Image 1 (cartoon, rainbow, N blue to C red):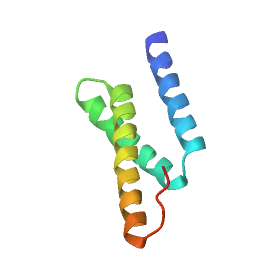
Image 2 (tube, helix red, strand yellow):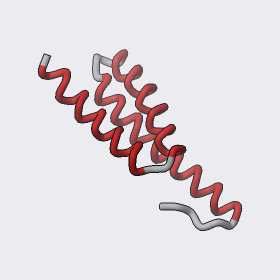
Image 3 (cartoon, rainbow, N blue to C red):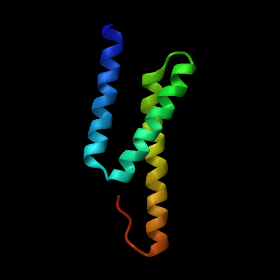
Image 4 (cartoon, helix red, strand yellow):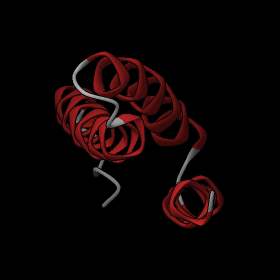
Length: 80
């Protein structure tokens, strides 16, 4: 039981810090990616926690690139 809660707690702490420090759009991307990655990881050999962490990182990266491209197109300075 300890094996399950320690990684899950780490992922929740990471997701919580990401949500608290980033904009709402980036947090939404992280949550969407974490859900999709968790489901994919679960079906790919019971690695839901690793899938959720990877999904969060990938979705956050995707939405950051998308926000920078939109800001550059509008001529506004991109955030981070």
